[in-house]
Image (cartoon, rainbow, N blue to C red; front, side, top):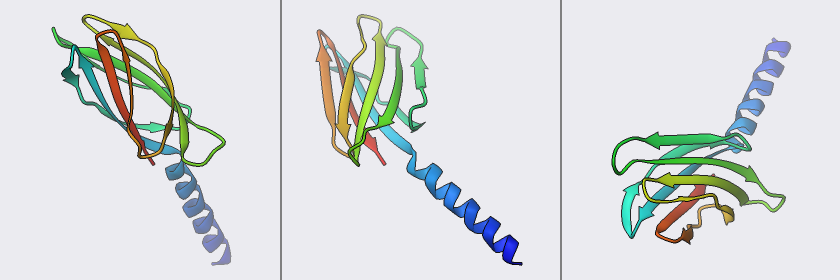
Length: 114
């Protein structure tokens, strides 16, 4: 019985650690001020994630979120493509705080939630 309790505690601890290392990323992609996509991605720390939507107003978004040494701060490396523009910004963002980057006609707004 004691072994079972230890095994269950280890599993609960592992599950809690795994949950701490995943984030929800809310993004809004705009081209010439017009929203072309609002993807929400569930990502794991330091693992790449991506979404692609085809069509005339399609887009692709690839990103990797990595925890910084400061709690609640994350490095977000991304690649954004639309029919008219591309950009590859790297941002350092605070958890639950919106960030925005624009290059030419393309804008990405992003929030990383713990």
